[in-house]
Image 1 (spheres, each protein chain N blue to C red):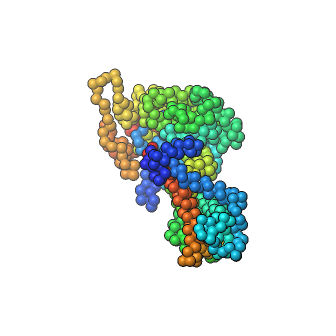
Image 2: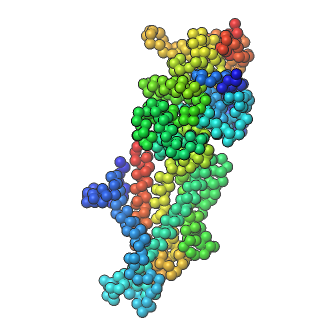
Image 3: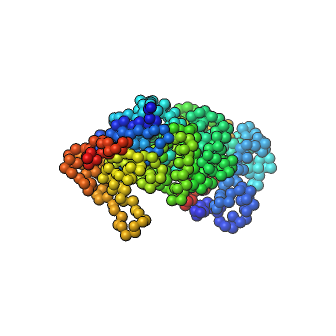
Length: 302
Length: 323
């Protein structure tokens, strides 16, 4: 096995988490238990946001503005993590924010993944001018700075959750196209693809039945790694005001709203959503890293 | 009666990007193959054996072109067919076994799915019927416990079994012609023997014609009715196996036969053919074999030998054979 890469891989922790280990049926060394648990909690939070959240995330009480978290002086049991500049419950907003991040993050990754994988397969398998066209477009795309490009697109189409997904997909499909094309180039020379040609399968049948299933591994690994990138970009767009429109509770938006209160000592308005973004992105990346090592035969030293 | 396969003066060329280098990998080749017959094609690496097979299948890589000649299969001109017609023919009426059958299986699909794939592609069989047929085919290639094996994945099977499964795929649509391109070079000797027996059994039971491409003359002696010897893209000699082994007409064939190691006489030195195979882009004038030929004459250095009938069904491209 390769050397453990995630911080959760130390032997003592591995021993203490044996049960969770078995339960997850992952016997491999270095499985990132903590990041996976965090992601799981975040997903559950997103799914059951309306059940868990103590109050409405979009309607506040103006009389209760800038209340600190419950354990600080001036905090109240009613607002466990305090309130923002409109008197909205921060905890509820964070909970619903998880839903926004998850929905936007996952759909954008799926969208980018579907487009990029399809184009990567076409490009790699068909070769010739199709390959040339797709790869030159990809090169041009990759030459543009992602965030600037996303801001530009957002400014053109206007802010909405749906638009954010499309923008993120449009910006990030190129990474898939590149990686998948490379995989396909090597798969195309494998004997089972030749056998399929010799057996009279059409190009489409070969791409669908023989190429696609064999690149899914890479697509999934890339997707996990892209999830972090996409969520950060979404937060950045929301922070800049071209992302999820207010009063929707997006973490990036909360950060943007909260920065005004930072000098006034309202730390919970920035630190909390910031921590949420960090936790989610870090967890997704650690899981992705582990998957990459696990599924890559070269790193697995097979 | 029309033969099953008739190759008539086939020439295939590889042309480099700007046409600077032209290599004639298959040069003016003609032969016929009757139904149920086995033809061995032997020759050194780079003598054009595989290009010949790919020309028949019309699966040449980009850059290769069939420049002249005809390929008739069951009386139909294959070179005149559209890509779609060719695709429907491949795997159904002409099947092919590739050089490394071990790697010919897709690691992600069950044996049943892969053996049934041709049936689904060519005969529109449902997944269920394809699986039922797959089980029968596994029985036909003598795989024990076929009910269990259809559900397994390639990595769960031994090398010999994967071999047989590739054989099962090849015969799944009951083709008339099977082209096997060095199917045993990657196998160890015991499995080789088993596999050859299997191919021969399948051939007898299904009345298949077989083109067996190899550089192993021992296999040719065992498997084939007739043998064709290729050198530098040309068919230098063709005839019944017995005759070729007993009385080769072409010096190259004779040299090949002499370079088989023999166990009977341990003191005899293994003979090798002097010199190197020629550069196909710059063939010597006259007979391509003349720089290495022990019996070279003036005429060989000037003129390319024509196809000369040595005996009935025995032809050679050598000026010496004319006498």
